[in-house]
Length: 640
Image (cartoon, rainbow, N blue to C red; front, side, top):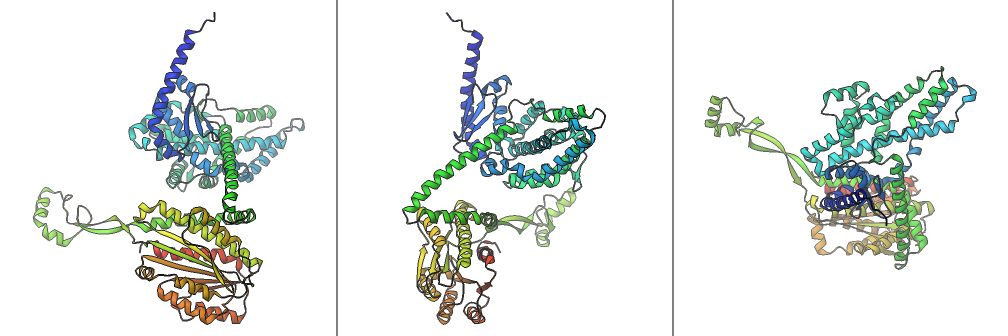
Protein backbone atom coordinates (compact mmCIF):
# COMPACT_ATOMS: atom_id res chain seq x y z
CA UNK A 1 0.00 0.00 0.00
CA UNK A 2 1.37 3.43 -1.00
CA UNK A 3 1.61 5.88 1.85
CA UNK A 4 0.38 9.39 0.92
CA UNK A 5 2.02 12.32 2.64
CA UNK A 6 -0.61 14.29 4.60
CA UNK A 7 1.44 17.48 4.20
CA UNK A 8 1.34 17.00 0.42
CA UNK A 9 -2.47 16.65 0.51
CA UNK A 10 -2.78 19.79 2.63
CA UNK A 11 -0.59 21.69 0.18
CA UNK A 12 -2.65 20.51 -2.79
CA UNK A 13 -5.85 21.46 -0.99
CA UNK A 14 -4.43 24.89 -0.24
CA UNK A 15 -3.45 25.38 -3.89
CA UNK A 16 -6.91 24.35 -5.08
CA UNK A 17 -8.61 26.78 -2.70
CA UNK A 18 -6.22 29.55 -3.70
CA UNK A 19 -6.87 28.85 -7.38
CA UNK A 20 -10.64 29.10 -6.93
CA UNK A 21 -10.35 32.29 -4.87
CA UNK A 22 -8.03 33.84 -7.45
CA UNK A 23 -10.44 33.04 -10.29
CA UNK A 24 -13.30 34.75 -8.43
CA UNK A 25 -11.07 37.74 -7.62
CA UNK A 26 -9.91 38.09 -11.24
CA UNK A 27 -13.49 37.91 -12.49
CA UNK A 28 -14.25 41.03 -10.45
CA UNK A 29 -11.38 42.88 -12.10
CA UNK A 30 -11.61 41.49 -15.64
CA UNK A 31 -13.26 44.61 -17.08
CA UNK A 32 -10.53 46.91 -15.71
CA UNK A 33 -7.81 44.57 -16.98
CA UNK A 34 -9.45 44.48 -20.40
CA UNK A 35 -9.51 48.28 -20.55
CA UNK A 36 -5.89 48.47 -19.37
CA UNK A 37 -4.50 45.86 -21.80
CA UNK A 38 -6.93 46.70 -24.65
CA UNK A 39 -7.24 42.97 -25.22
CA UNK A 40 -10.77 41.69 -24.47
CA UNK A 41 -9.91 38.13 -25.52
CA UNK A 42 -6.99 37.63 -23.10
CA UNK A 43 -7.69 34.90 -20.51
CA UNK A 44 -6.09 34.78 -17.05
CA UNK A 45 -5.35 31.21 -15.96
CA UNK A 46 -3.73 30.26 -12.61
CA UNK A 47 -1.08 27.53 -12.91
CA UNK A 48 0.05 25.32 -10.03
CA UNK A 49 3.35 24.38 -11.66
CA UNK A 50 4.68 27.66 -13.11
CA UNK A 51 7.06 29.81 -11.08
CA UNK A 52 6.72 32.94 -13.25
CA UNK A 53 4.13 34.67 -15.38
CA UNK A 54 3.85 33.27 -18.89
CA UNK A 55 2.18 35.01 -21.82
CA UNK A 56 1.11 32.65 -24.62
CA UNK A 57 -0.04 34.85 -27.50
CA UNK A 58 -1.09 31.90 -29.67
CA UNK A 59 -3.42 30.68 -26.95
CA UNK A 60 -4.40 34.23 -25.92
CA UNK A 61 -3.68 33.18 -22.32
CA UNK A 62 -1.75 34.85 -19.52
CA UNK A 63 -0.69 32.15 -17.04
CA UNK A 64 -0.31 33.11 -13.37
CA UNK A 65 2.25 31.37 -11.08
CA UNK A 66 0.03 30.22 -8.23
CA UNK A 67 2.86 28.43 -6.35
CA UNK A 68 4.98 31.58 -6.24
CA UNK A 69 2.02 33.61 -4.97
CA UNK A 70 1.59 31.14 -2.12
CA UNK A 71 5.32 30.92 -1.35
CA UNK A 72 5.57 34.71 -1.21
CA UNK A 73 2.35 34.94 0.85
CA UNK A 74 0.87 37.61 -1.44
CA UNK A 75 -2.64 38.93 -0.94
CA UNK A 76 -5.03 39.44 -3.87
CA UNK A 77 -4.26 43.13 -4.33
CA UNK A 78 -0.52 42.45 -4.48
CA UNK A 79 -1.14 39.72 -7.05
CA UNK A 80 -3.27 42.14 -9.06
CA UNK A 81 -0.43 44.69 -8.97
CA UNK A 82 1.96 42.13 -10.47
CA UNK A 83 -0.54 41.29 -13.24
CA UNK A 84 -0.92 44.97 -14.14
CA UNK A 85 2.84 45.48 -13.99
CA UNK A 86 3.59 42.47 -16.20
CA UNK A 87 1.04 43.55 -18.82
CA UNK A 88 1.65 47.31 -18.64
CA UNK A 89 3.44 47.36 -22.02
CA UNK A 90 1.20 44.76 -23.65
CA UNK A 91 -0.71 47.23 -25.90
CA UNK A 92 2.62 48.62 -27.14
CA UNK A 93 4.06 45.10 -27.56
CA UNK A 94 1.16 44.17 -29.82
CA UNK A 95 1.53 47.30 -31.91
CA UNK A 96 5.34 47.41 -32.07
CA UNK A 97 6.64 43.89 -31.36
CA UNK A 98 9.03 44.12 -34.31
CA UNK A 99 10.52 47.39 -32.99
CA UNK A 100 11.17 45.90 -29.55
CA UNK A 101 12.85 42.87 -31.15
CA UNK A 102 14.83 45.08 -33.54
CA UNK A 103 16.46 47.19 -30.83
CA UNK A 104 19.90 45.72 -31.52
CA UNK A 105 19.84 47.27 -35.02
CA UNK A 106 18.31 50.54 -33.82
CA UNK A 107 21.10 50.90 -31.24
CA UNK A 108 23.83 49.55 -33.52
CA UNK A 109 25.87 52.77 -33.52
CA UNK A 110 25.95 52.84 -29.71
CA UNK A 111 26.81 49.12 -29.49
CA UNK A 112 29.62 49.46 -32.05
CA UNK A 113 31.09 52.54 -30.36
CA UNK A 114 31.33 50.91 -26.90
CA UNK A 115 32.54 47.62 -28.39
CA UNK A 116 35.54 49.23 -30.09
CA UNK A 117 36.27 51.37 -27.03
CA UNK A 118 36.36 48.37 -24.66
CA UNK A 119 38.24 46.21 -27.17
CA UNK A 120 40.89 48.93 -27.51
CA UNK A 121 41.15 49.25 -23.74
CA UNK A 122 41.59 45.49 -23.33
CA UNK A 123 44.36 45.43 -25.93
CA UNK A 124 46.14 48.19 -24.03
CA UNK A 125 46.26 46.38 -20.70
CA UNK A 126 46.22 42.67 -21.53
CA UNK A 127 49.01 40.56 -22.99
CA UNK A 128 48.51 38.91 -26.36
CA UNK A 129 48.11 35.55 -24.62
CA UNK A 130 45.03 36.90 -22.85
CA UNK A 131 43.51 38.54 -25.91
CA UNK A 132 39.71 38.55 -25.86
CA UNK A 133 37.78 38.09 -29.10
CA UNK A 134 35.96 41.23 -30.29
CA UNK A 135 32.80 39.13 -30.93
CA UNK A 136 32.74 38.26 -27.22
CA UNK A 137 33.08 41.95 -26.36
CA UNK A 138 30.27 42.92 -28.72
CA UNK A 139 27.93 40.31 -27.21
CA UNK A 140 28.71 41.72 -23.78
CA UNK A 141 28.06 45.31 -24.93
CA UNK A 142 24.84 44.35 -26.68
CA UNK A 143 23.61 42.60 -23.55
CA UNK A 144 24.43 45.59 -21.32
CA UNK A 145 22.64 48.10 -23.58
CA UNK A 146 19.57 45.90 -24.05
CA UNK A 147 19.44 45.28 -20.29
CA UNK A 148 19.62 49.04 -19.74
CA UNK A 149 16.70 49.57 -22.11
CA UNK A 150 14.80 46.77 -20.38
CA UNK A 151 15.21 48.62 -17.05
CA UNK A 152 13.81 51.73 -18.71
CA UNK A 153 10.87 49.65 -19.96
CA UNK A 154 10.24 48.34 -16.43
CA UNK A 155 10.25 51.89 -15.07
CA UNK A 156 7.83 53.02 -17.78
CA UNK A 157 5.57 50.03 -16.99
CA UNK A 158 5.60 50.90 -13.27
CA UNK A 159 4.52 54.49 -14.00
CA UNK A 160 1.86 53.41 -16.52
CA UNK A 161 0.15 51.22 -13.93
CA UNK A 162 0.05 54.04 -11.37
CA UNK A 163 -1.06 56.62 -13.96
CA UNK A 164 -3.68 54.75 -15.98
CA UNK A 165 -5.16 52.05 -13.74
CA UNK A 166 -8.23 53.51 -11.94
CA UNK A 167 -7.53 51.27 -8.93
CA UNK A 168 -4.28 53.10 -8.14
CA UNK A 169 -5.75 56.54 -8.58
CA UNK A 170 -7.12 55.87 -5.11
CA UNK A 171 -4.43 57.27 -2.80
CA UNK A 172 -4.93 54.57 -0.18
CA UNK A 173 -4.48 51.76 -2.71
CA UNK A 174 -1.52 53.55 -4.27
CA UNK A 175 0.05 53.94 -0.83
CA UNK A 176 -0.35 50.22 -0.09
CA UNK A 177 1.40 49.26 -3.30
CA UNK A 178 4.25 51.70 -2.73
CA UNK A 179 4.77 50.23 0.75
CA UNK A 180 4.79 46.75 -0.80
CA UNK A 181 7.29 47.90 -3.44
CA UNK A 182 9.56 49.31 -0.73
CA UNK A 183 9.73 45.87 0.88
CA UNK A 184 10.77 44.38 -2.44
CA UNK A 185 13.08 47.19 -3.60
CA UNK A 186 16.79 46.57 -3.18
CA UNK A 187 18.47 49.62 -1.64
CA UNK A 188 21.84 47.90 -1.99
CA UNK A 189 21.75 48.75 -5.70
CA UNK A 190 23.19 52.13 -4.82
CA UNK A 191 26.35 50.54 -3.47
CA UNK A 192 26.74 48.22 -6.48
CA UNK A 193 30.31 47.83 -7.67
CA UNK A 194 29.04 48.49 -11.20
CA UNK A 195 27.77 52.07 -11.20
CA UNK A 196 26.09 51.79 -14.61
CA UNK A 197 23.92 48.89 -13.35
CA UNK A 198 22.89 50.88 -10.30
CA UNK A 199 22.17 53.92 -12.45
CA UNK A 200 19.85 51.96 -14.77
CA UNK A 201 17.84 50.63 -11.83
CA UNK A 202 17.89 53.79 -9.72
CA UNK A 203 14.97 55.44 -11.55
CA UNK A 204 12.44 52.89 -10.31
CA UNK A 205 14.02 53.06 -6.84
CA UNK A 206 13.74 56.87 -6.89
CA UNK A 207 10.01 56.73 -7.76
CA UNK A 208 9.28 54.16 -5.05
CA UNK A 209 11.07 56.30 -2.42
CA UNK A 210 9.98 59.76 -3.64
CA UNK A 211 8.34 60.46 -0.28
CA UNK A 212 11.53 59.58 1.62
CA UNK A 213 13.51 62.82 1.31
CA UNK A 214 16.71 61.39 2.80
CA UNK A 215 16.89 58.36 0.52
CA UNK A 216 15.72 60.36 -2.49
CA UNK A 217 18.51 62.86 -1.82
CA UNK A 218 20.98 59.98 -1.46
CA UNK A 219 20.09 58.71 -4.95
CA UNK A 220 20.28 62.16 -6.53
CA UNK A 221 23.64 62.86 -4.90
CA UNK A 222 25.14 59.54 -6.04
CA UNK A 223 24.06 60.21 -9.64
CA UNK A 224 24.25 63.98 -9.67
CA UNK A 225 22.98 64.77 -13.19
CA UNK A 226 21.01 67.79 -14.36
CA UNK A 227 18.93 68.00 -17.51
CA UNK A 228 17.54 71.42 -18.44
CA UNK A 229 18.49 72.57 -14.93
CA UNK A 230 16.54 69.87 -13.08
CA UNK A 231 17.35 66.46 -11.66
CA UNK A 232 17.53 63.70 -14.28
CA UNK A 233 15.02 61.78 -12.14
CA UNK A 234 12.46 64.59 -12.09
CA UNK A 235 13.00 65.07 -15.82
CA UNK A 236 12.48 61.43 -16.84
CA UNK A 237 9.58 60.93 -14.45
CA UNK A 238 7.76 63.91 -15.96
CA UNK A 239 8.55 63.01 -19.57
CA UNK A 240 7.52 59.37 -19.15
CA UNK A 241 4.23 60.41 -17.54
CA UNK A 242 3.65 62.87 -20.39
CA UNK A 243 4.21 60.07 -22.93
CA UNK A 244 1.91 57.74 -20.98
CA UNK A 245 -0.87 60.34 -20.95
CA UNK A 246 -0.42 60.79 -24.71
CA UNK A 247 -0.65 57.02 -25.19
CA UNK A 248 2.89 56.84 -26.60
CA UNK A 249 5.22 53.83 -26.47
CA UNK A 250 8.62 52.63 -27.60
CA UNK A 251 8.59 54.79 -30.75
CA UNK A 252 8.70 57.94 -28.57
CA UNK A 253 10.42 56.42 -25.53
CA UNK A 254 13.64 55.15 -27.10
CA UNK A 255 14.61 58.45 -28.80
CA UNK A 256 14.04 60.25 -25.47
CA UNK A 257 16.26 57.72 -23.67
CA UNK A 258 18.92 57.86 -26.37
CA UNK A 259 19.09 61.65 -26.26
CA UNK A 260 18.92 62.33 -22.50
CA UNK A 261 19.49 59.19 -20.36
CA UNK A 262 21.86 56.94 -22.28
CA UNK A 263 24.74 59.51 -22.29
CA UNK A 264 24.90 59.29 -18.47
CA UNK A 265 24.67 55.48 -18.53
CA UNK A 266 27.53 55.48 -21.05
CA UNK A 267 29.59 57.86 -18.88
CA UNK A 268 29.40 55.63 -15.78
CA UNK A 269 30.06 52.54 -17.85
CA UNK A 270 33.18 53.92 -19.53
CA UNK A 271 34.48 55.19 -16.20
CA UNK A 272 34.36 51.58 -14.99
CA UNK A 273 36.18 50.41 -18.12
CA UNK A 274 38.85 53.10 -17.67
CA UNK A 275 39.36 52.03 -14.05
CA UNK A 276 40.76 48.62 -15.10
CA UNK A 277 44.49 48.73 -14.34
CA UNK A 278 47.37 46.92 -15.97
CA UNK A 279 48.33 45.30 -12.64
CA UNK A 280 46.49 41.99 -12.31
CA UNK A 281 44.52 43.20 -15.29
CA UNK A 282 43.65 39.72 -16.48
CA UNK A 283 41.87 38.90 -13.21
CA UNK A 284 40.30 42.35 -13.04
CA UNK A 285 39.07 42.12 -16.61
CA UNK A 286 37.58 38.69 -16.00
CA UNK A 287 35.94 39.95 -12.80
CA UNK A 288 34.49 42.91 -14.73
CA UNK A 289 32.79 40.66 -17.29
CA UNK A 290 31.69 38.14 -14.66
CA UNK A 291 29.97 40.81 -12.57
CA UNK A 292 28.25 42.13 -15.65
CA UNK A 293 26.91 38.67 -16.43
CA UNK A 294 25.49 38.04 -12.97
CA UNK A 295 21.80 37.28 -13.11
CA UNK A 296 19.39 39.30 -10.98
CA UNK A 297 17.67 36.53 -9.04
CA UNK A 298 16.10 38.69 -6.35
CA UNK A 299 12.68 38.74 -8.02
CA UNK A 300 11.05 35.40 -8.69
CA UNK A 301 7.96 36.99 -10.25
CA UNK A 302 8.94 39.64 -12.80
CA UNK A 303 9.81 38.40 -16.26
CA UNK A 304 13.40 38.67 -17.43
CA UNK A 305 14.38 40.39 -20.68
CA UNK A 306 14.78 36.99 -22.35
CA UNK A 307 11.28 35.93 -21.25
CA UNK A 308 9.78 39.19 -22.54
CA UNK A 309 11.60 38.74 -25.86
CA UNK A 310 10.15 35.22 -26.15
CA UNK A 311 6.66 36.67 -25.60
CA UNK A 312 7.32 39.35 -28.22
CA UNK A 313 8.40 36.70 -30.74
CA UNK A 314 5.22 34.78 -30.08
CA UNK A 315 3.13 37.94 -30.52
CA UNK A 316 4.90 38.60 -33.83
CA UNK A 317 4.44 34.99 -34.97
CA UNK A 318 0.76 35.20 -34.11
CA UNK A 319 0.42 38.45 -36.06
CA UNK A 320 2.12 36.87 -39.08
CA UNK A 321 -0.17 33.83 -38.82
CA UNK A 322 -3.23 36.08 -38.62
CA UNK A 323 -1.93 38.18 -41.52
CA UNK A 324 -1.44 35.08 -43.68
CA UNK A 325 -4.92 33.87 -42.84
CA UNK A 326 -6.32 37.34 -43.53
CA UNK A 327 -4.39 37.50 -46.80
CA UNK A 328 -5.92 34.23 -48.01
CA UNK A 329 -9.42 35.34 -47.06
CA UNK A 330 -8.83 38.74 -48.73
CA UNK A 331 -7.88 37.07 -52.01
CA UNK A 332 -11.09 35.01 -51.93
CA UNK A 333 -13.27 38.00 -51.06
CA UNK A 334 -11.75 40.21 -53.74
CA UNK A 335 -12.06 37.49 -56.40
CA UNK A 336 -15.83 37.62 -55.85
CA UNK A 337 -15.72 41.31 -56.88
CA UNK A 338 -13.60 40.72 -59.97
CA UNK A 339 -10.27 41.72 -58.39
CA UNK A 340 -7.38 39.45 -59.33
CA UNK A 341 -4.67 38.31 -56.90
CA UNK A 342 -2.16 40.36 -58.93
CA UNK A 343 -4.23 43.50 -58.33
CA UNK A 344 -4.43 42.74 -54.60
CA UNK A 345 -0.62 42.35 -54.52
CA UNK A 346 -0.17 45.64 -56.40
CA UNK A 347 -2.51 47.34 -53.95
CA UNK A 348 -0.47 45.97 -51.02
CA UNK A 349 2.67 47.31 -52.64
CA UNK A 350 1.24 50.83 -52.55
CA UNK A 351 0.01 50.28 -48.98
CA UNK A 352 3.62 49.72 -47.96
CA UNK A 353 4.90 52.75 -49.89
CA UNK A 354 2.39 55.12 -48.28
CA UNK A 355 2.35 53.84 -44.69
CA UNK A 356 4.44 56.69 -43.28
CA UNK A 357 2.22 59.33 -44.90
CA UNK A 358 -0.96 57.64 -43.69
CA UNK A 359 0.43 57.38 -40.15
CA UNK A 360 1.21 61.11 -40.21
CA UNK A 361 -2.33 61.79 -41.41
CA UNK A 362 -3.74 59.75 -38.49
CA UNK A 363 -1.99 62.13 -36.08
CA UNK A 364 -3.45 65.06 -37.99
CA UNK A 365 -6.98 63.60 -37.81
CA UNK A 366 -6.74 63.10 -34.05
CA UNK A 367 -5.74 66.73 -33.52
CA UNK A 368 -8.46 67.90 -35.88
CA UNK A 369 -11.16 66.06 -33.93
CA UNK A 370 -9.86 67.69 -30.76
CA UNK A 371 -10.22 71.13 -32.30
CA UNK A 372 -13.88 70.47 -33.17
CA UNK A 373 -14.67 70.61 -29.47
CA UNK A 374 -12.37 72.70 -27.32
CA UNK A 375 -12.39 74.90 -24.26
CA UNK A 376 -12.29 78.67 -24.63
CA UNK A 377 -12.03 81.55 -22.15
CA UNK A 378 -15.48 82.87 -21.29
CA UNK A 379 -16.01 85.97 -19.11
CA UNK A 380 -18.69 85.60 -16.42
CA UNK A 381 -19.90 88.24 -13.94
CA UNK A 382 -20.24 87.99 -10.17
CA UNK A 383 -17.49 85.44 -9.58
CA UNK A 384 -15.69 85.08 -6.24
CA UNK A 385 -12.24 85.95 -7.59
CA UNK A 386 -10.88 88.04 -10.41
CA UNK A 387 -10.99 91.67 -11.52
CA UNK A 388 -13.38 94.05 -9.76
CA UNK A 389 -16.62 94.67 -11.70
CA UNK A 390 -17.83 98.24 -10.95
CA UNK A 391 -21.52 97.60 -11.75
CA UNK A 392 -21.64 94.55 -9.49
CA UNK A 393 -19.90 96.55 -6.72
CA UNK A 394 -22.58 99.26 -6.87
CA UNK A 395 -25.40 96.68 -6.79
CA UNK A 396 -23.80 94.83 -3.89
CA UNK A 397 -22.58 97.87 -1.91
CA UNK A 398 -24.19 96.83 1.46
CA UNK A 399 -22.41 93.48 1.23
CA UNK A 400 -19.17 95.31 0.47
CA UNK A 401 -19.54 97.52 3.62
CA UNK A 402 -20.18 94.43 5.76
CA UNK A 403 -17.16 92.65 4.24
CA UNK A 404 -15.03 95.74 4.89
CA UNK A 405 -15.99 95.68 8.57
CA UNK A 406 -15.11 91.98 8.81
CA UNK A 407 -11.90 92.43 6.81
CA UNK A 408 -12.89 89.50 4.58
CA UNK A 409 -13.71 90.06 0.90
CA UNK A 410 -13.21 86.55 -0.43
CA UNK A 411 -16.92 85.66 -0.61
CA UNK A 412 -17.96 88.82 -2.47
CA UNK A 413 -19.28 88.08 -5.95
CA UNK A 414 -18.30 91.43 -7.43
CA UNK A 415 -15.50 90.28 -9.68
CA UNK A 416 -15.18 89.28 -13.30
CA UNK A 417 -13.47 85.96 -13.89
CA UNK A 418 -12.36 84.16 -17.02
CA UNK A 419 -12.72 80.40 -17.00
CA UNK A 420 -12.68 77.64 -19.58
CA UNK A 421 -15.99 76.59 -21.05
CA UNK A 422 -16.51 73.91 -23.68
CA UNK A 423 -17.42 75.29 -27.09
CA UNK A 424 -18.69 73.12 -29.92
CA UNK A 425 -18.61 73.92 -33.60
CA UNK A 426 -21.71 73.06 -35.57
CA UNK A 427 -20.45 70.41 -37.97
CA UNK A 428 -22.03 69.16 -41.20
CA UNK A 429 -24.08 65.97 -41.46
CA UNK A 430 -22.15 64.77 -44.47
CA UNK A 431 -18.98 65.49 -46.44
CA UNK A 432 -18.68 64.06 -49.95
CA UNK A 433 -15.31 64.03 -51.69
CA UNK A 434 -14.99 63.12 -55.38
CA UNK A 435 -11.72 62.21 -57.08
CA UNK A 436 -11.42 62.59 -60.86
CA UNK A 437 -8.49 60.72 -62.39
CA UNK A 438 -7.14 61.43 -65.85
CA UNK A 439 -6.90 58.09 -67.70
CA UNK A 440 -6.17 59.57 -71.12
CA UNK A 441 -3.52 58.27 -73.51
CA UNK A 442 -0.92 60.83 -72.39
CA UNK A 443 -0.71 59.32 -68.87
CA UNK A 444 2.64 57.50 -68.96
CA UNK A 445 4.12 55.08 -66.38
CA UNK A 446 5.67 57.80 -64.21
CA UNK A 447 2.40 59.71 -63.98
CA UNK A 448 0.39 56.53 -63.33
CA UNK A 449 2.81 55.50 -60.57
CA UNK A 450 2.52 58.90 -58.85
CA UNK A 451 -1.27 58.91 -59.19
CA UNK A 452 -1.63 55.39 -57.75
CA UNK A 453 0.54 56.26 -54.78
CA UNK A 454 -1.41 59.49 -54.19
CA UNK A 455 -4.80 57.80 -54.40
CA UNK A 456 -3.69 55.11 -51.96
CA UNK A 457 -2.49 57.63 -49.40
CA UNK A 458 -5.49 59.94 -49.81
CA UNK A 459 -8.39 57.48 -50.10
CA UNK A 460 -7.19 55.39 -47.18
CA UNK A 461 -6.39 58.42 -45.02
CA UNK A 462 -9.89 59.75 -45.56
CA UNK A 463 -11.29 56.30 -44.75
CA UNK A 464 -9.23 56.33 -41.53
CA UNK A 465 -10.69 59.73 -40.67
CA UNK A 466 -14.24 58.52 -41.36
CA UNK A 467 -13.76 55.54 -39.02
CA UNK A 468 -12.31 57.86 -36.42
CA UNK A 469 -15.28 60.21 -36.76
CA UNK A 470 -17.71 57.37 -36.11
CA UNK A 471 -15.75 56.25 -33.05
CA UNK A 472 -15.50 59.82 -31.71
CA UNK A 473 -19.08 60.88 -32.49
CA UNK A 474 -19.68 61.60 -28.80
CA UNK A 475 -16.89 64.19 -28.71
CA UNK A 476 -18.28 66.12 -31.67
CA UNK A 477 -21.84 65.70 -30.32
CA UNK A 478 -23.15 64.72 -33.74
CA UNK A 479 -22.78 62.01 -36.35
CA UNK A 480 -20.86 62.93 -39.48
CA UNK A 481 -20.46 60.89 -42.66
CA UNK A 482 -17.28 61.35 -44.70
CA UNK A 483 -17.67 59.60 -48.05
CA UNK A 484 -15.55 59.28 -51.19
CA UNK A 485 -16.09 58.39 -54.82
CA UNK A 486 -13.69 58.02 -57.77
CA UNK A 487 -14.14 58.68 -61.48
CA UNK A 488 -11.91 57.98 -64.49
CA UNK A 489 -12.12 60.26 -67.51
CA UNK A 490 -10.56 60.24 -70.98
CA UNK A 491 -12.62 60.31 -74.19
CA UNK A 492 -15.40 58.95 -71.94
CA UNK A 493 -15.97 58.83 -68.17
CA UNK A 494 -17.10 56.19 -65.66
CA UNK A 495 -17.37 55.88 -61.90
CA UNK A 496 -15.10 53.33 -60.21
CA UNK A 497 -16.05 53.85 -56.56
CA UNK A 498 -19.44 54.91 -55.24
CA UNK A 499 -20.06 56.96 -52.13
CA UNK A 500 -21.87 54.32 -50.09
CA UNK A 501 -21.25 50.58 -50.26
CA UNK A 502 -20.66 47.58 -48.02
CA UNK A 503 -17.19 47.28 -46.45
CA UNK A 504 -15.93 44.55 -48.82
CA UNK A 505 -17.37 46.23 -51.90
CA UNK A 506 -15.82 49.54 -50.87
CA UNK A 507 -12.46 47.79 -50.44
CA UNK A 508 -12.71 46.27 -53.91
CA UNK A 509 -13.58 49.66 -55.42
CA UNK A 510 -10.62 51.32 -53.69
CA UNK A 511 -8.34 48.61 -55.12
CA UNK A 512 -9.84 49.14 -58.59
CA UNK A 513 -9.39 52.92 -58.32
CA UNK A 514 -5.70 52.42 -57.63
CA UNK A 515 -4.78 49.49 -59.85
CA UNK A 516 -6.90 50.00 -62.97
CA UNK A 517 -5.37 53.31 -64.09
CA UNK A 518 -4.00 52.38 -67.51
CA UNK A 519 -3.69 55.56 -69.60
CA UNK A 520 -5.54 54.16 -72.61
CA UNK A 521 -8.72 56.29 -72.73
CA UNK A 522 -7.83 58.69 -75.55
CA UNK A 523 -8.52 62.42 -75.14
CA UNK A 524 -8.91 64.55 -71.98
CA UNK A 525 -12.64 65.24 -71.62
CA UNK A 526 -13.08 66.15 -67.97
CA UNK A 527 -16.04 68.48 -68.73
CA UNK A 528 -18.49 65.60 -69.28
CA UNK A 529 -17.47 63.94 -66.02
CA UNK A 530 -17.79 67.18 -64.03
CA UNK A 531 -21.17 67.84 -65.66
CA UNK A 532 -22.40 64.41 -64.51
CA UNK A 533 -21.29 65.12 -60.92
CA UNK A 534 -23.11 68.47 -61.06
CA UNK A 535 -26.29 66.76 -62.26
CA UNK A 536 -26.05 64.25 -59.40
CA UNK A 537 -26.44 67.04 -56.84
CA UNK A 538 -30.12 67.03 -55.88
CA UNK A 539 -32.13 70.19 -55.06
CA UNK A 540 -32.29 69.11 -51.41
CA UNK A 541 -28.51 68.63 -51.33
CA UNK A 542 -27.93 72.07 -52.87
CA UNK A 543 -29.93 73.64 -50.02
CA UNK A 544 -27.91 71.69 -47.46
CA UNK A 545 -24.63 72.73 -49.11
CA UNK A 546 -25.75 76.37 -49.02
CA UNK A 547 -26.65 76.05 -45.31
CA UNK A 548 -23.33 74.27 -44.54
CA UNK A 549 -25.15 71.10 -43.46
CA UNK A 550 -23.30 69.26 -46.21
CA UNK A 551 -19.99 69.84 -47.96
CA UNK A 552 -19.01 68.65 -51.39
CA UNK A 553 -15.37 68.70 -52.53
CA UNK A 554 -13.86 67.65 -55.88
CA UNK A 555 -10.20 66.89 -56.59
CA UNK A 556 -9.00 66.32 -60.14
CA UNK A 557 -5.62 64.89 -61.15
CA UNK A 558 -4.71 65.49 -64.80
CA UNK A 559 -1.57 65.52 -66.91
CA UNK A 560 -2.59 68.40 -69.17
CA UNK A 561 -5.22 70.91 -70.09
CA UNK A 562 -8.72 69.83 -71.04
CA UNK A 563 -9.49 68.96 -74.65
CA UNK A 564 -12.61 71.15 -74.29
CA UNK A 565 -11.49 74.11 -72.13
CA UNK A 566 -14.59 76.25 -72.66
CA UNK A 567 -16.94 73.48 -71.54
CA UNK A 568 -14.75 72.66 -68.53
CA UNK A 569 -14.52 76.32 -67.49
CA UNK A 570 -18.32 76.66 -67.63
CA UNK A 571 -19.01 73.59 -65.47
CA UNK A 572 -16.30 74.52 -62.97
CA UNK A 573 -17.98 77.92 -62.53
CA UNK A 574 -21.39 76.26 -62.01
CA UNK A 575 -19.99 73.90 -59.39
CA UNK A 576 -18.36 76.78 -57.50
CA UNK A 577 -21.64 78.75 -57.64
CA UNK A 578 -23.40 75.71 -56.16
CA UNK A 579 -21.03 75.83 -53.19
CA UNK A 580 -18.77 72.98 -54.24
CA UNK A 581 -15.06 73.26 -53.47
CA UNK A 582 -13.12 72.09 -56.53
CA UNK A 583 -9.39 71.79 -57.24
CA UNK A 584 -7.20 70.40 -60.01
CA UNK A 585 -3.55 69.36 -59.90
CA UNK A 586 -1.57 69.08 -63.13
CA UNK A 587 1.39 66.67 -63.41
CA UNK A 588 3.96 66.20 -66.18
CA UNK A 589 5.69 68.63 -68.50
CA UNK A 590 3.29 70.72 -70.62
CA UNK A 591 3.61 73.40 -73.28
CA UNK A 592 3.12 77.12 -72.73
CA UNK A 593 -0.23 76.89 -74.52
CA UNK A 594 -1.40 74.07 -72.23
CA UNK A 595 -0.22 76.06 -69.19
CA UNK A 596 -2.25 79.05 -70.37
CA UNK A 597 -5.29 76.86 -70.99
CA UNK A 598 -5.03 75.20 -67.57
CA UNK A 599 -4.83 78.58 -65.82
CA UNK A 600 -7.78 79.85 -67.89
CA UNK A 601 -9.92 76.93 -66.67
CA UNK A 602 -8.88 76.76 -63.04
CA UNK A 603 -7.38 80.06 -61.91
CA UNK A 604 -8.39 83.06 -64.06
CA UNK A 605 -11.25 85.28 -62.82
CA UNK A 606 -11.84 83.38 -59.56
CA UNK A 607 -11.56 84.74 -55.99
CA UNK A 608 -8.70 82.32 -55.36
CA UNK A 609 -6.84 79.77 -57.50
CA UNK A 610 -8.37 76.33 -57.97
CA UNK A 611 -5.53 74.81 -60.00
CA UNK A 612 -1.94 73.86 -59.19
CA UNK A 613 0.68 73.07 -61.86
CA UNK A 614 3.38 70.65 -60.68
CA UNK A 615 4.81 69.97 -64.16
CA UNK A 616 8.03 67.94 -63.72
CA UNK A 617 7.71 67.87 -59.91
CA UNK A 618 5.52 64.79 -60.15
CA UNK A 619 6.92 63.31 -56.92
CA UNK A 620 5.22 66.17 -54.99
CA UNK A 621 1.73 65.04 -56.04
CA UNK A 622 0.93 63.03 -52.87
CA UNK A 623 2.12 65.74 -50.49
CA UNK A 624 0.31 68.53 -52.35
CA UNK A 625 -3.02 66.70 -52.58
CA UNK A 626 -2.89 65.68 -48.90
CA UNK A 627 -2.16 69.32 -47.99
CA UNK A 628 -5.20 70.53 -49.94
CA UNK A 629 -7.35 67.83 -48.30
CA UNK A 630 -6.09 68.90 -44.86
CA UNK A 631 -6.75 72.60 -45.50
CA UNK A 632 -10.31 71.91 -46.62
CA UNK A 633 -11.18 69.67 -43.69
CA UNK A 634 -9.48 72.05 -41.24
CA UNK A 635 -11.78 74.84 -42.43
CA UNK A 636 -14.77 72.60 -41.64
CA UNK A 637 -13.71 71.23 -38.25
CA UNK A 638 -11.69 73.92 -36.52
CA UNK A 639 -13.48 76.12 -34.00
CA UNK A 640 -13.16 79.74 -35.00
